[in-house]
Length: 565
Image 1 (tube, rainbow, N blue to C red):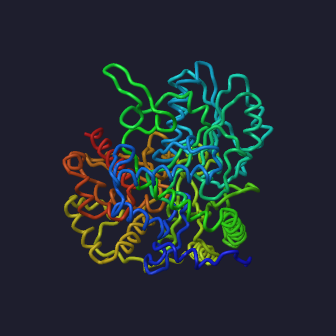
Image 2 (tube, one colour):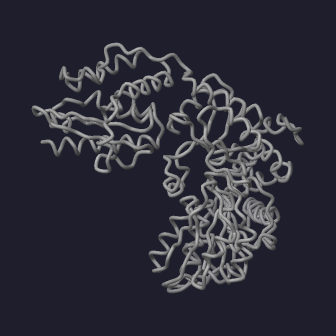
């Protein structure tokens, strides 16, 4: 193992979240690209603010208000210094990267984007750096051009430059890809764009936590970032904009603190950056963001980057030993992310199995659905790194992946008793009787994770749907995984055939079929299915996002029953 320039224990001791176990295992947190853990100093900063310093800013002459204002504006100065901005006037506080991008889309778009103009981006972008431009293009009768990337997850400067033309007004690009970890050649692209008088916005959500930044050297026109991915509080971030450009943009929201004067029928605006900051801000969050920046700076961004680069290289090497594992995103320059697929296993099922071993990763499309569609995959398993991760974390990940491949489980497989199986549904038991049988089964398991294993067993036992039925007409939209449902009517009763490419989701649809298959359509429609699944405890076994998919399944079953009457 490479020698560490800073002891892992010194960093890990700063993060209280790591001092716990998950399902009896030490927590291995590999989901920092979604949201990083918080060091004690940030937590203490937030607590101290609310206990001793809270007051509104910019509006009071009393001591607490003056002190809060000083801390608030000092945070602005601190952030400007940290990212190498020429002035604190270039820093606009927002709720995070998403709001920063939307602010630019609204203000820059209304000022500089006109009919026939073009906005250039890539298929690799986070939805936050795609949806606002889709809306803007529609509003302004402009064109959004979404460029492909290589199968390794890279873009080349020459190919990108060839897409620039005299109608291109803005390039919107991630500094670092959140789903693949690719570090784009942004310096070269910015230089080429500016030769053509094209403005450049960088989504820095994954740049701020990992890279030493200098806006004056980078020379982008806008840089958008979030605190919560960089060891700070949630719900706060900033927009960096070149001051002369911010001066040209109109306010975004109207209200207190963004005005100079308000009269009956007109108002005048405060100077930048305050003209973009209407209303009472997230004062504690902004002060906490500065505390997180102090924390990163105390270690050194170059040291952190080297530590994470060594760890990422080690992770790439180690996962090669896992049978059937394929890395998605193999750019030569990457930061903080290892995205992969495990042959024969849906990403959601792998994520669940890893969680049972105390390992937190992210699964799915990572808010980059166009990229996953472009690659023709349902999503990936993403292990993402933070300052606190270690070689032991990677070893634990690899060991658990090998267990998944070999078929090992965290818990003993549940034994079904008198619950209705999918092969025994022609006995026409009522919905209420089937529910009672299912509840009796579930009472055998005291722990939620054991009940989740039961759900997975239901999915394993569900009869696969014939491929000829896996068509768009039978697909249930709104689920995280692919789900299909087909119904037939026989002797007045409705029968369902369903399937999913994710085992946990197969368990969900199997449970619904277990309760409802072979019933009279009117009985299904007269049953409160939402209450029914609440009673059997299904929502407690799945994530909030999967509950949305479960609701879509219920709606589809109700629709099929309604048609069958």
